[in-house]
Image 1 (cartoon, rainbow, N blue to C red):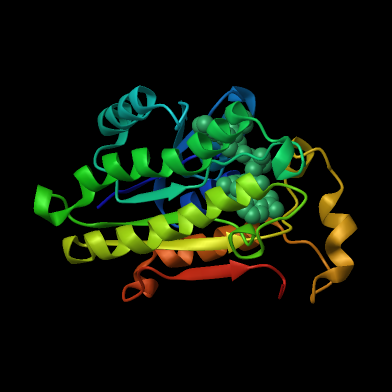
Image 2: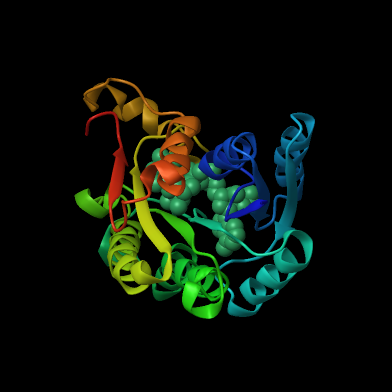
Length: 248
Ligand code: NAP
């Protein structure tokens, strides 16, 4: 039977690496993106070049109407979803809490946590054995910032990721008896574009000496943990987290 996976924010970084690995593992891959159609198409081309199945789907996953339309398009293209990775996320420029304005806070919380609720809601309707589905698995991409709080840089982002962790725990228990597992990964210091968005493109290299492994991580190292949590090998794990932080 075909397995279909949606990875939000899969045009670049951790999401793109997860999409490419998921295709290698036999999933039909829905590559969601916000604006960067060219990058999303490159991910799809790479999947197809290697004999896999994938399509790019533009949608702002912080918008309820766009998420609902996204899932309907996926139903028509690939059929019922069996896996969801809530990966899309943003950072804003590093600053202290007393400088943060409400518009920024709304953007961060909509993109990083409201998006997870909206996508999970649609996924559960398709996966839940109580609703005629055949089960599934969800992985939420949190951050080590949920543990550290990211003082002086982006406490708002850290708080949104703390919310992702609480969401993962609560949802995992809510749907455990309906054939759906929900887990999280908490990466840190991964070489992607997100650090430039926070105003410090070289952040990983600045910090790397303080990481026990003394190096930054690659998106593929996060992707492997995500795909393991989604797989049957993790069949008795729900409501749990894998930290991918080089030992920090
Ligand atoms: P990235 O390279 O900046 O890529 C972000 C991806 O999210 C892009 O594909 C972007 O699409 C998409 N996106 C952003 N907002 C979206 C929205 N509203 N709707 C749909 N797609 C949206 O980021 P990354 O570093 O790979 O981060 C991925 C996840 O890992 C995030 O949740 C992040 O918080 C988490 N994380 C990253 C690190 C790290 O060190 N990199 C550490 C801890 C946690 P476009 O290309 O169209 O803009």
